[in-house]
Image (cartoon, rainbow, N blue to C red):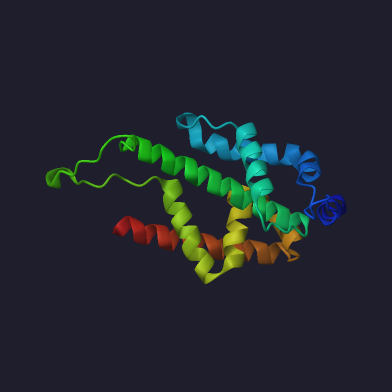
Length: 185
């Protein structure tokens, strides 16, 4: 862990951390996380685990005001980048299905709303969770999108495993309530 923090505190000529070295150190772990996320997508998406890791790297490198201070902060940002990439791809696929390249013609009798995929519902629920408790949103991103265990999350956040488990249950409950409310509408 200390190696990553040292790499993040070291800077290049432009004053930014050397994310290339950090990614080199954590590539296998990030790839394992990405494999789990891509596997959940199934055959409907052509994004590979390697592609997801590389896109996350490019997204983090391109961030203008990214100031990473620790391993925890790096994984939180990497998880958020992976979430954004997966959500953007999902939205793009839905737009293409609905004829994003065609001229739109509205027919009043054919305005049936298509079912929204679960990933987009989860994204909206996470945005709502951030309004309630940003730490819980971060925990969900680390657990779901980064695939970290509760023990690792507890260590990264500097809390006990019991507290992490309690926070996880609270976050899951709040997300489930939000998702159930959407299902009723």
